[in-house]
Amino acid sequence: MPKKQTDIVLVGAGIMSATLAAMLKELQPDMTVEIFELLDAAAEESSNAWNNAGTGHAALCELNYTPQNPDGSVGIARALTVNTQYDLSQLFWAYMVRKGAMGDPDSFIHNVPHISFVWGDENVTFLRKRYDAMSAHHCFKGMEYSEDPAVLEGWMPLVMQGRDPLQRVAGTRMITGTDVDFGAVTRNLLAYLRSQPGVNVSYSHKVTNLRRTEDGDWSVSVKDEKSGQTRTLFAKTVFLGAGGGALKLLQKSGIEEGKGFGGFPVSGIFLQCDNAELVARHDAKVYGKASVGAPPMSVPHLDSRYVDGKRSMLFGPYAGFSTKFLKHGSVTDLFSSIKPDNIGPMLAVGRTNMDLTKYLVGQVLESKEHKYNALQDYFPSANPDDWKFIVAGQRVQVIMPDQKAGGKLQFGTEVVSSADGSLAAVLGASPGASVAVAVMLDVLGRLYKDKLAGWAPKMTEMIPSYGKSIADDAELCHTVRSYAADVLKLAKIE
Ligand SMILES: Cc1cc2nc3c(=O)[nH]c(=O)nc-3n(C[C@H](O)[C@H](O)[C@H](O)COP(=O)(O)OP(=O)(O)OC[C@H]3O[C@@H](n4cnc5c(N)ncnc54)[C@H](O)[C@@H]3O)c2cc1C
Image 1 (cartoon, helix red, strand yellow):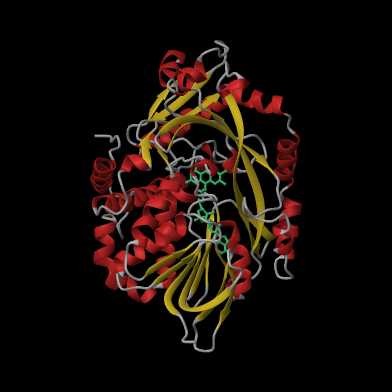
Image 2 (cartoon, protein in one colour):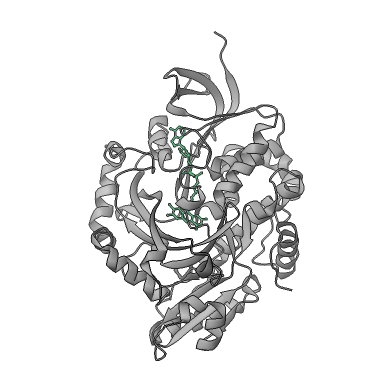
């Protein structure tokens, strides 16, 4: 049998692989690309609209990106990074929409104002300081602040009606916030890719093993889940965009850079409401403050959602504990990921994250009644009969080796790659799908270092701010945001 050879194998048909493949085919149209997906369709794990919250994370409303410093001031550096990373996604989507390669923006993105909402003196003081720091920067131009219940009721009637009038409250609002159906983004990109020469997308195909060959290629074993047959193909480059499945494959690859990494799964539950009368009265993503010990992505929020042309509401997430690494995974995932090289970091993380453990145990034991009480903190007159529980996607938080502490738990996204630039994996889940393009630019830099200079003109066509800083250049920020908003049919700040 002749060796089946391809330029790149991408494992998983979620937003990360779809984004990387789409960028690569633009940069080098003759590249041969094989995408393997274990399930029988694209975006059925974390990238599915109902497995995540669909927030276009731009740090407009999520308080975890603006920590309070020991001197009481509020830091906005992390918020600026996330904010401008999200611009890169919108710019790339705008390019693909203009090219006719991504469908109508209505199929995947909508404006939904992003609101931060807090109560109590201490939290109100924090929010005011955060507003002062953020609104002074051009990236957050247009942010509004109010402590007036009447103004806040105009922004979010369901959140304000029935609330104790003596409670001190405050909110900020950005009308440029978005709700994104990341499942639709993924499917739209893959539909286009499948029409391109040299691209194969195989569903119900599980990548079971990876091995370096003597000539430096990767030998990739793939099992057809329907026929049970396994075949091998050879690739110069491998991208592990397997979400919760990436850690196991990284371990199988045996690359030195993957040693010591582990994963800690956190499952999520949302409440969903389809009552049209209520849904029509809420047009916002309202993010509050996290409880003590809660991981940053567990901040409660009440969201308007647009999925498959239908509006609805979501509240959550409630964290849970499951040993699975994928929603469709196995309960043995956590145990089988423990290896001699990561047991030290994993134990160290267990020892030093008692607040998180307590929080998770509390969430798992929480009764349905308590869960509804949490909803009523944000929507005081909510009626449980209007809401149903749905199981969200599985997140695998990254545990990484750390010289000082032995191991550290990481809530962000981590790219791990081999020194020779032949394999890269994306671990972790936050800020997640929103920053897929920024993460893939990092991946491209690691896998195709020598080609980047030659690709720069095309890169600039795809992402007009490529190589420049939107955070440092107010005029550039205004120009590219205006352009992306026009193409994606979104609101803009003049
Ligand atoms: C509860 C929750 C809320 C979130 N909210 C947001 C949000 O509001 N905004 C945001 O931007 N991000 C959010 N995220 C994060 C975001 O969903 C993820 O970062 C993103 O979807 C990850 O995309 P991915 O392509 O890496 O993974 P996935 O979408 O999980 O895709 C990986 C694919 O790989 C496949 N696979 C796994 N192993 C194999 C194998 N061996 N062979 C073949 N295929 C394999 C899987 O079946 C899966 O389809 C949230 C995540 C969760 C869980």
